[in-house]
Each structure stands twice: as C-alpha cells, then as structure tokens.
Image (tube, rainbow, N blue to C red; front, top):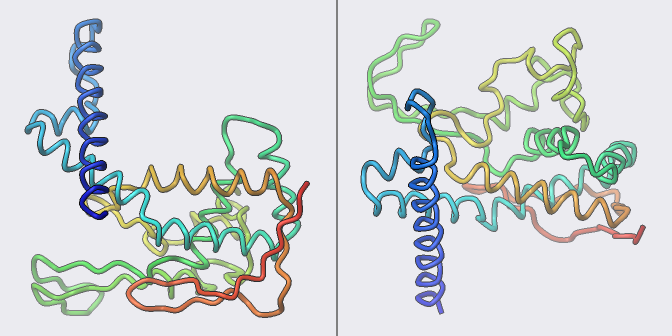
Length: 248
C-alpha cells in the first residue's frame, strides 16, 4: 500500500512538473520580457536540473498537505470560532459575501496559529560565535525560538488570551496591532531559506476548509473544558471534541 501511494505521488509530481515545463517554454516563446523580472522558483530549479525540480515539488506537496499540521490548525481555528460567536458571525459575513479577498479569514487563522500553534518554536544551529546583548553564544550551539511562549506574553501581544483576529488587520496606531511587536515573536512557518516549503499549499487548504465549514454550519462548543493539546515534538489536539455543527 505504501509503495503504491509513493509511486502515485511520484507520477503525479512528474506530471505537474512536465506540464509546468511546457508552460514555461511557451511563455518564453511568446514573451518579449528582457529577463529583468524575478524568475519563478520552479524556473530557477529547472535551471539546476529537472530531477531537482521534481524532488522540491514533491517536498512542497507533501509538506503542504501534512495531515497532522492541517488537522491541528483547522481544529484550533474552528474551536476558537466556536467559542467566540461574534468573531464567527463576522467571518461568516465575509465568506458569504463571496468576495475574492478574505482578509478576516486569514486573520482568524493567523490568530489561531498564535494562540494554539502546532509547534512550540523553531531551532537553529549557530554557524559562528555570537555575542548578543551580553550573552555569549558559542559556535554550533542550538538556539530555540520559543514562539508559543512568547506569543502568549502581554508585552508582545496585548490581551494575549483573547481571540482577536483584528490585531492582524488594524493600523499601527491601534495598541493591539501585531506590528507593534517583534516580527519573529510569532513565526509558525519559520523564516528564510528554512521556511516551511509547503506554506502556501497549507494556507490554501486551511482557508478552504475553514471557509466551507463556516459557510454551511453554525459552530458551537458544548463543554466548559477547553480544547485538549498534548505537547510532544508537536502539539497534538486530542479528543474529546465537543463540537456541534448546526445546518444554516
């Protein structure tokens, strides 16, 4: 079974890469571009070799549809919406408007990742010796960015225990504006060359699932107990799930 899934995944990736190559070649033939614009990441990989492009595309697909991360992020967002009916109503109004851009949906998911992230933080291996703010960091040290802990501190996010998607949409003059804190306090997908390669696919999947649920159901949480999380290398959301889905 595992071999058949792996083979199917390889064939699927190869198919899309081959189709992308054809489109890139057609675009080059029909375009008068001088080459000054930034090349898409796939085109850059193809300049290395086709196999590298296929491997990277495969990693992007698998990282983007990772069931543990998607399940956690969706359940956490639905839980926070179920326990915050006013926010759920506001999101439903945006979803039902059928507008192309959905800033409040994205803000809800960002706020969910801040409050109930799937990972506690990111770890990096220091490539050289540093002295930062009086702290000596030797070369080859492991440095942990404790995003989950920092994201729950009021000095970084005012009212950290409240589900406030608006903090991702307000202007700089608003005290709750997310930009008033350091940008690396919350970095659930990482940053730079080590950023999660499946970020865009994962975001699209989360937005699709959450919007479809909110479009069709009124969510309620029927218990006084909060959502259960079991922290290991990842944060696993565990049963019981006290959701009620009411048809609209």
